[in-house]
Image (tube, rainbow, N blue to C red):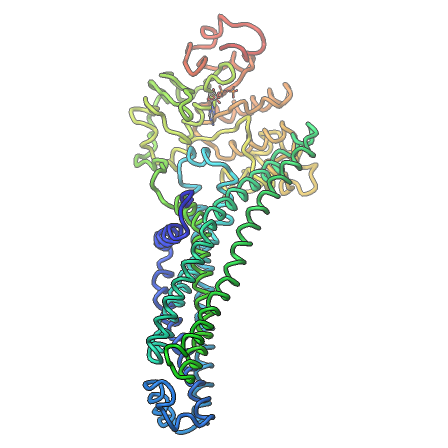
Length: 597
Ligand SMILES: Nc1ncnc2c1ncn2[C@@H]1O[C@H](COP(=O)(O)OP(=O)(O)OP(=O)(O)O)[C@@H](O)[C@H]1O
């Protein structure tokens, strides 16, 4: 975001700097900028020439060109020679018409190019940001609020295009003002000098008036973000909100946030709305001043009239200049947010790895692994083995670090110290896609996406055929359930699969892991919501299917642990014991291992 307290000018400069960096990802827009500016300048020249010809036309119609000295000398001579070159008033009228048409055509070409470039810039910016969310470390995404990420992707990415348009228009405005200034200088340098001085004063006044706009732009963005957060909370927490009767309270919070967003937006728009009439009044005052000053400076009436006509035409350019410049100041916080997201600095990216997956390893070995979430220690000097081709159970009280181990195996995070070895090599050095192809997880927090059962299961292997899918459904006990649904596996299961029961969602997660057909299967409390009979049936099927493969089970249920080959018992981020179940579990008793830390 633009720094709090940054002045309007500082914000404009920051916005332009960020825009320049952002346009690195859209080289076409960078290349097209001079073309757009060129077109704008030609349009301005055509406009100025057209106005000058109209003035000549008027003088000629009034018979004033017979005495060029009657109007400003240089302009009078130039006007006479233009009229002589063209041949007469009819040709002059045709030239004026031609210039108006030329300006119209150029304006149309400009709009076509800038519109399609704008659309392209937004598209590339949002694609880039979406890609960034997927390739940056999982930790980075976890640290940011979802509402913030949504706002940057869904709203701020559009601002890049509008800011680009404002920037090119700004250059065009400057060029148009310069062209008008040259013609005005030719008419009377004294009056032009006064006009420039007054315009400078008006501009300073407007800059002062619009100073709070940057802070307001930042608060509008913050309010929008917090409202977005509440919207997400309403949708994602709908069940809890209703279950605890928090509808009114949630709505009241939303109303407050919504009113606050309106308040900031209204203040910003009120200020923006004041800029236009203030600009108009300021420049009209300059025109009045010039009319009054012309008499004092003894500038003749005709020249004054011509100057006033030109100044009047110049006014929209000055006004547009002010509003484009204001827009850049307003959009500084959004451009900064997009730039920060695109900038690789301060972000970490998962190691892609270079080595092939070994096929002669005997175990996955954690060696002195430590890991902390934002300084909170989750694993402390953890060492244990997961033997290849065997069933290992990872047990321990809630919060002892079991899921963190799964997260490290999935390479969602990297250990702060220590190593996870497969054979002699660190898993971080194995090609990430190959490693993930080898491993599959079904968990208690089933990560189902909004869509159908089929969409969710196919995530594991998009090219799987119907037979493989049916096999995965059968093994996870889903066949009967799907037969009962109106559209079978194409039934919409809602957000995070909430149209299904907890046990059904778990079975979809298991089907997905089975379809992957991995060498290493991780079941993180994957059957905790199933009844004992169904759990036993699925376990039997999985044992047959994954016989001879590596299976890591995370569970609290004692009966599940008793039959495994190897047990690792954890407590508060440390390994307490490791070995055969009889040895490790001997000191424990009871059907549940929930409190075994
Ligand atoms: N995303 C996170 N951010 C911050 N702290 C976290 C995060 N995930 C886990 N922790 C903390 O790390 C520690 C280990 O958590 P972990 O989820 O690995 O435990 P667990 O043994 O799997 O627990 P459970 O059996 O309840 O699932 C806990 O103290 C937990 O609060």
